[in-house]
Length: 169
Image (tube, helix red, strand yellow):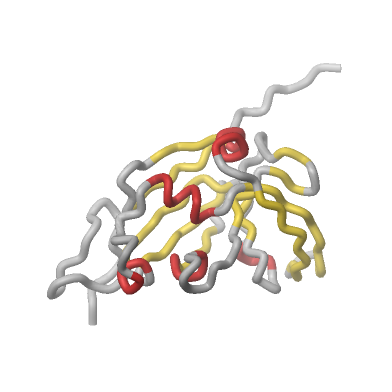
């Protein structure tokens, strides 16, 4: 029997971060504590699904990349968004406040295993345990981009390099 070597998948953590980084699924498994989430969600194409995912918390991975907000200022943190994109082009958005312990504290994962099977060959999966539908469960994540919304002084926005997404109104 011949085994085909599967290319290892990577996630680029970019945008409004001090230390952009590219991480393999194995690095996500080795560098951060692993959390487990047993979830049930509705899938539009196949109905109710129940799975167990394991992986690091999204907020811990982004925190190590150095998010471009003042961590001591809740209002600053609450204006940041995370755009997560999968290999198939499927994308979703989370607010930093959803995952921040001072706000929603949702234990969103970058899953490295699905039902005990490693995801190294297919890429990490976004897991949002609080969601009742699976639309934000992005498979084969290729990029996590942190962006600021809203304004700072006047109509100036922080974080060029794609970090800012709009102008204050």
